[in-house]
Figure 1 (cartoon, rainbow, N blue to C red):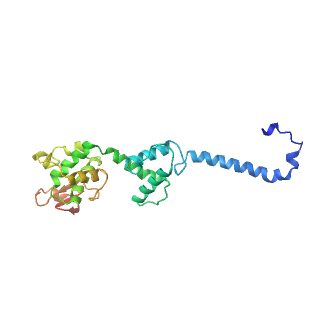
Figure 2: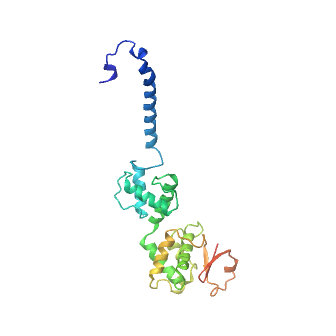
Figure 3: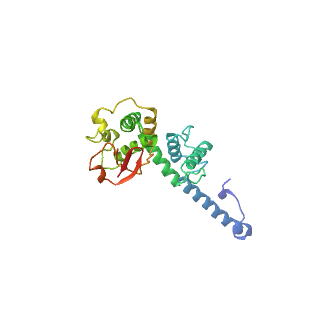
Amino acid sequence: MYLDQCKLPKGWMRENKLWQAFGGGLLVVLLLVSGWSLQKEGRTVLSWGDRGSDVTNIQRDLKTADFYHGSVTGFYDRKTTAAVRKFQQQKKLSVSGVADNQTRALLAALASREREITEQNIRLLSALIESEAADEPFLGKVAVGAVVVNRMHSGIYPATLEGVIFQSGAFQTVKNGQFGRPVSTDARRAAIDALNGEDPTGGCLFFWNPAKSNSPWSWQQREVTKIGRHIFAK
């Protein structure tokens, strides 16, 4: 039954003190709840029980980054919460299971990098690491791969992995035929780590072995670190 169908005595609302005391307050509460619901629909912080396209995107990013193995449903359930907690723990964020702005931004960036990793890129970078750093420790292999990735994102060098590796004069091993020899398991692992953003060089764009390079150009670069036999510079 609707309110306008109720046959209330004339002047009832004015005379009824209970309505005067609580009726207006109830109306305010209803308006606040309604406003909160609308705000929740458009909020950027997501948690258990939420639904929608934003949740779908989070689940896809978690799946791409190998934190979530459930179905992409668009519903923020217990599995999604657990996956977000696992991601936050690994990235040393506040572990709450709530996808706040910081969590979402870092997750989106990681998923974007993951999508760049194609099998072709892994093969190319593995081959270069094998040719340039076969006898280097594992960290040295990752460092060589990181230099290639840094060049790709620098805005100075070609914007693709293939372009960086085959740029004229960039790598001696491409020129002298060492590039393309059988790739070790460590070289492949190092390539995947470098493509995932691991960078022990701190953003370097150059590397060389001082025992093999006598070029004055090398020593004009700003040395940052030495890993294995290679010097890394910016």
